[in-house]
Image (cartoon, rainbow, N blue to C red; front, side):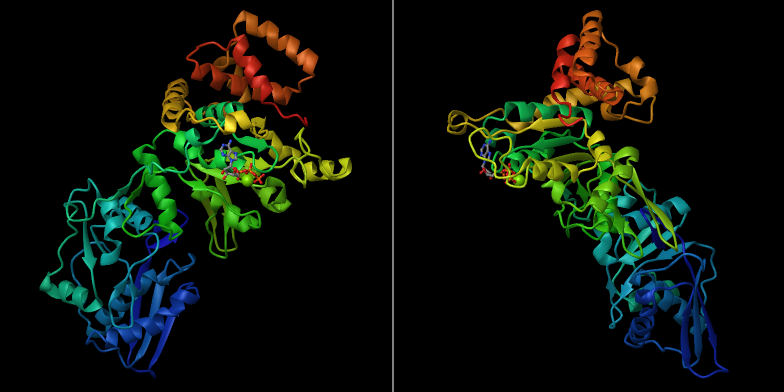
Length: 508
Ligand SMILES: Nc1ncnc2c1ncn2[C@@H]1O[C@H](COP(=O)(O)OP(=O)(O)OP(=O)(O)O)[C@@H](O)[C@H]1O
Ligand SMILES: [Mg+2]
């Protein structure tokens, strides 16, 4: 199989041995460097497994030739095709088999990247037997869950010699036994350091984060240094609802493809929290490389993407965020292929109001000139700010709040409210593609965001007084929908609108 984004497609490996020519080994079918290096690994592995590498012209073809093959996961299939072509001992049945594995020079199998999506795709394609490196058992076990052995059987393999004996009729490989695979699901880490309870004061910021989490809104926090922005952002995953199994499988697949699954972890149950450094390139954020791998936006799928010190990010990287923020996926095009990675995440951004950080702090002098402050703000483009529904100030905490001995409300209680609100939203959008308040389209705005009479009057007055643009009105509708959901109201009331209006951008 060859990985294409989060899916894999079958690759047929053919070998031809021509004894009439000088010994030579050619690999064709758009292999990249790492696949071409398979020649050396396969040659040594075959010899060290007690088999003969043919003294002849060996041609191996990887079909279809128009898909770029990369990585060492074709090693096993290449070795098997050469050995069986040389010994003319072809298997005569019509069973469709998949062979995955990187070969060590000794002939042992090393684990491959992306085993989970690869095996899931193999199952979809209708393969009957899957041979894979033993070290990938946990991922393969996850993919094989609930699969009838009549439909497909997976065999963990330790070495080339072992699989050769098996295919030649020895049948000594045992199918993967799901009950013996270590059943580790990485559970929600009740982290001791990131909980709303540890953040003193900042009730308005916490309320805004609760709204953002409930409606899937993006949020930008502005405030002086040391006011707790980073601390607040880090505790956002603790107020997000538990992931569904479907969501867990998707995030695990993305990790598997980018080779970031910790060993022993089967299914990621904790929502991702990604905080790329501001020196990140757009390829690192969006996904890229000559053969595209998921970027930070995809690794944050179903979780939080935290951009700390937002104005310090390169402009190009921030602009590249616009498409995933809008569509919930990224498309990466390269000369060889176009891939699509899912990227539905909640954007949490933090920044200081000016380079020195104290422009909005009444108790600290700001040393920046007005033009410098303006320039600092302009580093973030309008279109990006437009995609952020909630803009809040995070002021310094005063001493009374900071030195209070009682702990604030813990995240678990906030999470319960968020979960309830999301449930209401899910029911509302049950027959729609979109499933969060943050993405309500303009055409359905009137249908989903109904105002009561008092609220209507209030909004009219607000639009006139505050000179709200059409765009901010739409945003106000979406945010107030979430606020109404949090308080369990069917119709949006005046108090919901009033609260939503507080979170609008001050610059626009
Ligand atoms: N509201 C708060 N409650 C308790 N501790 C706080 C609070 N705010 C800040 N702190 C303490 O100050 C430290 C720094 O806070 P944090 O890194 O979140 O600030 P920041 O707003 O991100 O600052 P900067 O703008 O410099 O990045 C925290 O690690 C914590 O110890
Ligand atoms: Mg910070």
